Image (cartoon, rainbow, N blue to C red; front, side):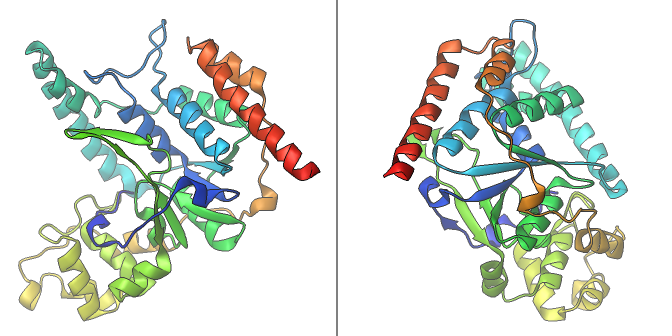
Length: 344
C-alpha cells in the first residue's frame, strides 16, 4: 500500500543474529519488486540470461534468502491474491509514472548519461505471472514456505503474525502491516548487507518496528493510526489529502480523535484549505477488515530443501554453477553443525 508515514515511525536497529530461530512472514510482492528494481547493471538494465529473460528476482531470492537461512531464519513468503477494486487509481497513477520515466530514460540513453539511465530504468519494473510462478518454484525448492493470500499479501502476513505467536514478524519495506495490526514489522531484511555511498560502503542492518511502541510514542490508538495513514495517502487514495504530511496529519488525528470527527473536520474552519476527494469510509473499512484467511503455523507446509531442483532452476537461467555449489555447501556445513550440536 505504501503508507507515507516513515518519518514519524520509531525504529530499532537489530542484527541478523537477533532473528535466529524466528519465523518471518515476508510480503512477497514487496520483496520481489525490491530485487527487480535494485539488482541491476549501472545503466539500469536488469540481470538477464542468454535468452533475454530477466533474472534479477531469482538472484535476490536465492542469494539473499540463502544468507537468511544460514543465519537460522525460517521464512514464509506470502503472495498477493486478488487486488481490491480501490487499487485501480494506484495502477493508473503508476502506469502514467512509468510512461514518464520511460521517456526520461530514452532521453538519457540518447545522451549516454549512464547515471540517469540507471535512475529511470528502475521504474520500468513488471512482475508478471511467469516471474511469480518461477519465484514460487525456487522458494519451495529452497525449503521456504509459500502462502497464497486471497487478497493483499501484506494483510494476510499481518494477520498470521497477529494470531500466531510462533510467527515473529512481517518483513516489508512498507509500513502497511502496521495498519493491518502486525505486532512487529522488520525492514531491510532482504537488502544487500552493504550499500555503496559517496564516502564508501556502509553496512545495512535490519530495523525492527513494534506496533505497541508506535502507538505509545505517537500517543494514538489503532483507529487513529489508520486515519493517519488515510490522510497521508495509501494505495487506495494515492497522495492522501493534498498538503497534509505525516506531522500535520498526526496533529489532526490527535486533536479530533475519532474517525468521523477527523474526516468531518477536513475542509472546515482552520482546516478549510484542505479537501477530501476520496471516500474515506470505504478506504477505512478496506484496511480495517481486509480479505484474509485464518492461518497459523500448523496450517503452513515448510517443504524440504531440494538442492537438485535449485540447481536445475538456476542453471537454466545461466547462473554460475560454482557459486550455486558454494552456497549449497555452506548449507551442508550448517546442517552438519546442527547435527553435531544435537548429538552432544
